[in-house]
Image (cartoon, rainbow, N blue to C red):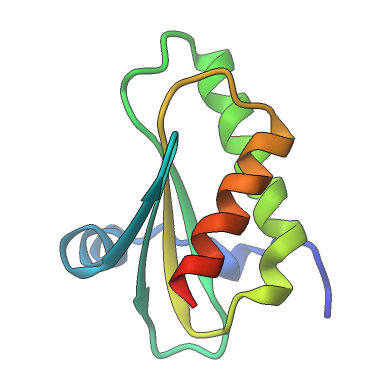
Length: 110
């Protein structure tokens, strides 16, 4: 399986995002929240959504990049056919912290 994150794996349509945020199940850990709902596709799609608490765009973008990279490494463990939204909260989290957070919520979601 390819480990890159393709365009079709990104959740961007406004209607799809509203469906995820209004009707999805959620799991939360410190600094991180996962919203997930099934879709009718044979692959999973993701959206990374930082909250407004990030003071600088640099911090917000770095956290989004770290989360996408962590998902890219763990996407083999996610069953296909899900829409996932990762909500990021501010804090001093590096790539390894986001990786562990993502791993924790994915294990709890299964």
